Length: 343
Image (cartoon, helix red, strand yellow):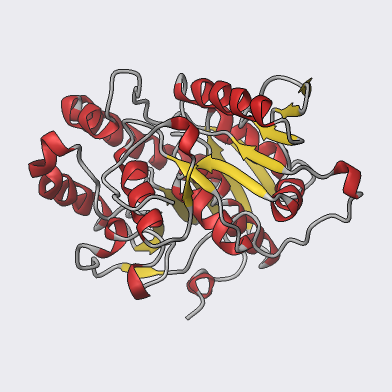
């Protein structure tokens, strides 16, 4: 069954991605496109860079409204994100319930008839049907807190069950692209696999001159200060290589184009232009965030990947994808996970 067929005609749909990085926003792009093609009105509720990215992506679209809706904040600065969640769990839960109460007001003031939440825990309601999108039914804990994974899953499941539907953007077969994250535990009754979600779905690359193409394309992502650290390391490595390279800095809200010798840095690219450069690149470097994994999959593109340190989901995906021989290590970063196979 087509997942969109469950939504009746002419709905007013609220779509709210989590604001931890840009990945949750980018994987909402194909959903927004499809719902608009089906004639629904869209209200995008987001904050910070995810909001600005979606405003840029759909700036010429009618019947799409934007609303600043602050999300939950969590710091990556002091180590592992799972440890941070556990440490601040009481205040974290209070913020989720605050988000839940704010949703009720949003629905009434904006005449919302459907809600789609990408990993925002508090956007369930009994007022209208609501969808929860996640590829992390299993939340990976750091090794020192491995014993808490069952507790984290139980808490996550409590929230998932409050939603009408849970969409898992992965394949059901052969551990999909997410491995244990989506396949370790039995599915909740309201959950189903819907296949990968990519902003490149349904797009065609531009026809551009060979002189405008790049040997290497690096896509920078992640929270600060890790995003800046990753950009600095990538640029240093590319300057040493000397090949013509493009660095997409993941900053849709700031900066301008810069050229440093053989390296061109741009703050952001539209989905179609980024897709064009990735298709033609001989070498791709990026984080192993799940949205990047889905984008690479739909392009049938192999990349050199590295995880955001302290982000257990990416550290797991890094090992899983290399074991599955889908991608290669970006060796310059020096990150060594639990994977024994070198590529």
